[in-house]
Image (cartoon, rainbow, N blue to C red; front, side):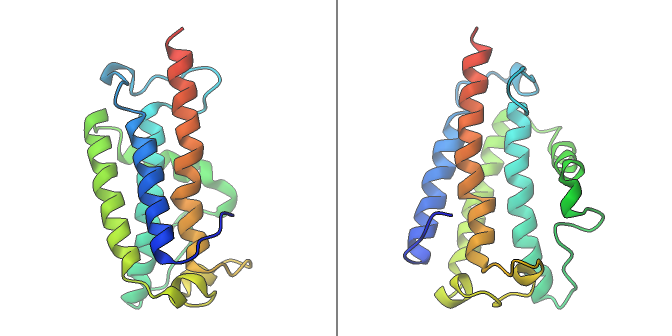
Length: 171
């Protein structure tokens, strides 16, 4: 995992990679938002829905814990060994949105996520055990790692996916 000097560095990386990712969709036609292409495992709309789903989940875990609720990870009714069904729930949830709406929603969610993240202390982000939900798996990750693997990492990998999708779609 990429290292971060502090919370500010993490936030800057989230904002940078989110912008690079979502800007790849500027030239994707609305009519192609649900087009699956051989060699790429998701449609453009699914790529954005995936990001939206995980952002919602991570913030939801923290909100539920703050409200005194028992947090179920990854999500009520889903197991870590069956994430395909969870991803499908993300796709279904956002399937009625236009590509422009998905892009706008993504930008709004990233802003909300950054505001949420800014409310953490450095210790809460970097020290394992600061949140029960972050310690819910045997790996006992700090919040920082959960944030990274659900924002920066997929923003980068899905940017490569949409670029490949656009290249193959142009043929």
